[in-house]
Length: 171
Image (cartoon, rainbow, N blue to C red; front, side, top):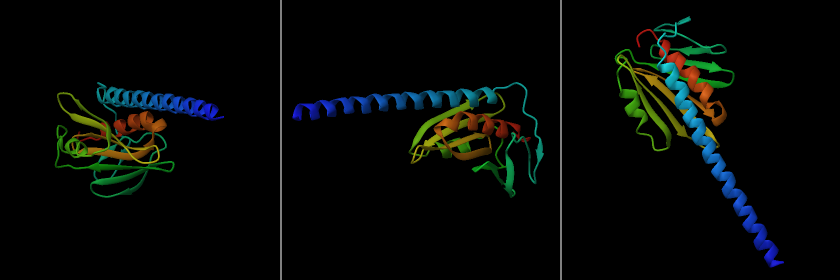
């Protein structure tokens, strides 16, 4: 009887270890895909044209994104029940690293990568939160956008968010 319990414990332990390893690999793959997706949009030769005029900026908003609140330097966007906060600092140029430096100070970073070309400095940051949630932040110069999302939505959200920050006129 004791041998069966020990065997069951060993089998369950192996299953837990294998499942944990798969989850880590899955997270690594998703984070790699997120970085690739954001970088692809950042490096597009043809810039994304704004399709929405706001108080302070012109911006491209992907389908299903709506403006729910707007001030001089912040725009609250929603897509379904997900909130996105767009921050715009006109005092920072498109090569500014200020937002990247602030993002790098977090202690729960699972991804932080910078992106650069001749005219712009950008970045992508993913922080691990509780309950399988992540904070995703992307920026170019003085523009950044942040949301909370799931692992399954990280890549799509990163694409949408990079399209948004890439479209802002003053970048």
